[in-house]
Length: 127
Image 1 (tube, one colour):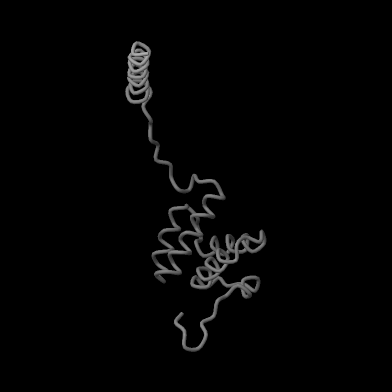
Image 2 (tube, rainbow, N blue to C red):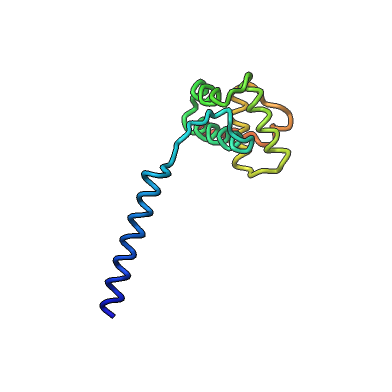
């Protein structure tokens, strides 16, 4: 039993050593910085949704526009309107739609299809 255990530990160490050599020296990971405009359409939509969530928290419209410019779109407000209407058309989550509608409204791109998803402040409540 002792001989088996020693053989097993030696084999484990040799295997770990070979694995580390192959992973770190022979075939290391090569990181590639891809530009944000190379993202898939669904990833761009998710990024836009994250920016809409940040805008809902901090109300910084200029910051939201600057963050969305990295996607390489020419007209950021029109892009936000397009994403918002796509979310509405595809019946995505109501909370996600409301965040996007708030951002689109802040950019002055509120359309009739977005109206039902607006959240108005009630008297005595903050914005």
